[in-house]
Amino acid sequence: MEIFAKLDILSAAAKYDVSCSSSGSNRQGAWNWLGKPHISGICHSWSNDGRCISLLKILLSNDCIFDCVYCVNRISNDIPRATFTPREIADLTVNFYRRNYIEGLFLSSAVFRSPDQTMELLLETISILRKAHKFNGYIHTKAIPGASMDLILHAGLYSDRMSVNVELPSERSLRILAPQKNFGSIFNPINSLSRKIAETRVMVPKKGRPEYFVPAGQSTQLMIGASPETDLDILDFSQSLYRKYDLKRVYYSAYVPVSSDSRLPAISCPPLLREHRLYQADWLLRYYSFQAEELLDPSDQFLSTDLDPKSAWALRHPEFFPVEINTASYNELLRVPGIGVLSSRRIMRERQLRSLGAENLQKMGVVMKRARYFILCNGHRAERSRPGFRELRDILATSRSLAGRYPQLELFINHREMLPATTGRGR
Image 1 (cartoon, rainbow, N blue to C red):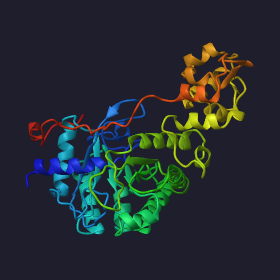
Image 2: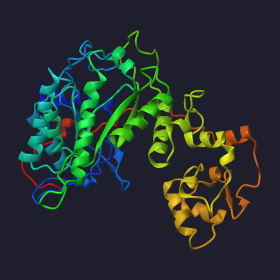
Image 3: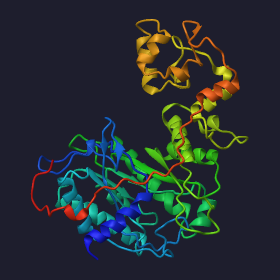
């Protein structure tokens, strides 16, 4: 099979893996190396400085030995199969980079023949890039559950970020939908990567800088809607992953109905709105000091569809409001709908110099059309009217629907327009 046919098959097969983000890496290289990872990121995502950046997102192989019922690449599914060689992926990555198509590589794979053999091929690919091509751009490598820990840890020396997809948020669901997998094979590499990352953060070699081992941390992915877990179950699970393994991100992927099976739910389209609310709640866990048990409880285990999680919490806790802008703590400001991390920091800084009124807050980035119902400025309410619960809920409710389909953007229009690139300078 020619390389462009493989590229069509394996780039399409990679679109269901969303456990990726902008780099956050600081890998350094010599003057003649190709690429700078600290400005790199993932396919059509955003870096810390606000740029939209892209990565070659691809599978090494979609020829899988497992039969997970939710997966399009499962062994029982009749689809075109393809497998790259490590040298083919390395050459594609370098050629595409030199043409400014991408800023790095996201490399994953189905379990090809065995976990160890798959991990060996992934390791060989990134080793060729780093050593033979002197590629210093961003590389995100998937750790294969069940593979030798030595192989996985060796891959961490060449990777900016690694991820092990948990996929299903409970061991019971994993046994039903992916009977060939088990939580042990998934969490062993997560735990080992977590420990090694923590060790290298404090280890200073003779050269005076930390060893490069997954400098951008690790992430994972949870599938939403393929199993019966509630939003509370999922957020509790994510919270435990952050606390125990210090993950950079947990990604949520709305289940795409790619097969029919009695063990899978009968849905016509992915639950994108539910995915969106979980991302909002996850943001509150990571940056706003919320706990999963605050956002949901056993009596109400699903996030609201018409309110964002922060506004829903505010309506359930009227005793917390109104908050005095000029005296509230940083964490108290974060709990006000319409006030984010940046605006909270600005308020904390500016109120040391002057007393703040409602007219000052909008200039600091506060969304006053929401925040005004929950704050005081020098003892006075920012909103004179006092709407009742139902009226305020209607005001805060979003009318924007996220239920439509959002296909992955194409990286190239025509692969064959790419000319061979054997020489030339990097960017």
